[in-house]
Image 1 (cartoon, rainbow, N blue to C red):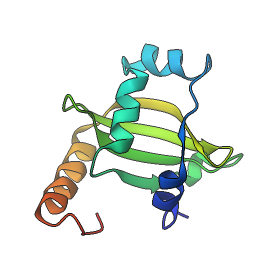
Image 2: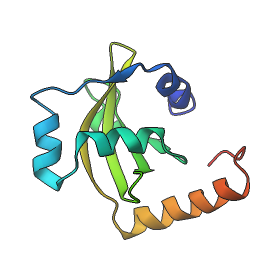
Image 3: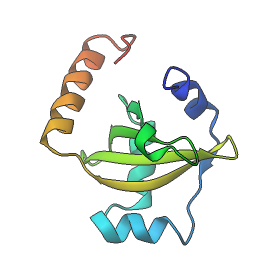
Length: 115
């Protein structure tokens, strides 16, 4: 499932922000939609399948960074095959930051490495 998620993300044309998810993401953890979008285009972006929350549609978890250096944990799905819909976003916890920073170091040493 996750092997092709990076290809699927590369085919996405934008984000699906609506009255249901944008205010919720901002209100719960003070994460702006623009910060979520930045995390998806920054490198590295680590993506993991989320089978626990995938009963009705495929969902993933991602770790990524913003231009301002904020480290985010995002839950998302892909709608209509071309739109990323962020369902939740928050700052990474200590364990997630450690995983992300290790991957970032490997990526900076070799941008072609699969992180």
